[in-house]
Length: 506
Image (tube, rainbow, N blue to C red):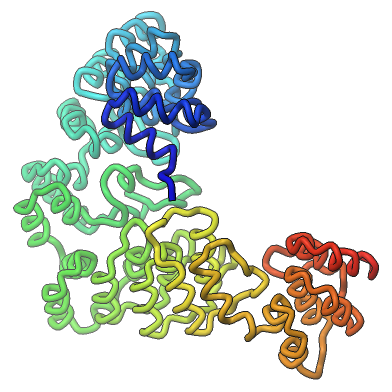
């Protein structure tokens, strides 16, 4: 297959290869100005590249619209940003802060100091987007609120910046920002950690995505703590310390934690020996865990924390197999199927996870989650979705043959081999004898109509006539997408089938 033009363009931009960029843009000029997406000119690594892209047709107005909220500005080279502003790109105070254009920021604040509290993306202040210490220092000197909270994540500038600009977070702490155990862990600051633990030892049990202190996505119908994106989803401060390379601080945090926290940290880190030893010394520990702690099994099947070893350890230790995560009600199997994580799906099925549970939000089974991500969201191109389908169907998952073909070759191969097992699938294949054998003697209008939809989708006019005469309803919607038999016939492209349905009143 030829490489994706978008990928070709961004690889050429990354290597600052002007001739390659020109070649891609000549063949695919629409790439220069994508709708509702980052303008490629902002990904230029040099002013020369940005200048060439503008000459090729990149629209500088789109640049100002894209970076107005402040989001994404840290990805733009400051020199390129300065050039684009000079070329006519509009500039908000949030973009100026994120781009690190201090001189422009000074001009804006001199003209209107109230901009220091202006609301940008997610209701953030300019300080939330500070590119570096110089930018943050200027904003603080002009009166920026060091602990201002955004409107979606209710998080401070120090929390927003700890991932990309820890030096700015440290500066904000020095200027009075409220500290927390995650900031201490990410910065490797033992003195700060000791101070926080002395004030409240319970801070060691805090988890990103747990409780009102650092809530998950969906809490109060908002985005949850920004730490989910700037540090790590569903993680303890101990994990953050390890993530940032502060092993000694990890050991200190672990040693000072209560038994339950040490156990849970060991579970999510898949430290089997430590977790098993704690469980052995504390019979009934798993049974005593709160619902929000038991949801770790489901959360470590989710795309942000996929961890086969951690999930297997938790199952071995007795975590309830189907306990859902609390924000949305997804079970471990829903989450693993969504990610195309076939090994995890297989593990959960081996342990007896039911395949027919529907989630409370979308009323969908794990198979439905796998299908939606593979065919619609496409967030996991690496996912083994054909194998996931095979595993779920082998385990007895309900499915609708009318979804065939899906358009995914691997999934369709799995489904094709099973079409003859369902009456609507046999109808899709045009196997009249199999259809009526599978329907049985007590023919219902609902089943006949579903079979009619299959025959219509397969373009089998004679079978459609037979089913209608047997009692199928030509204008009843069926299947997961609630289409009528005529709508399925249109997909077949069979004019004869369409005419038959119309003749019977469709």
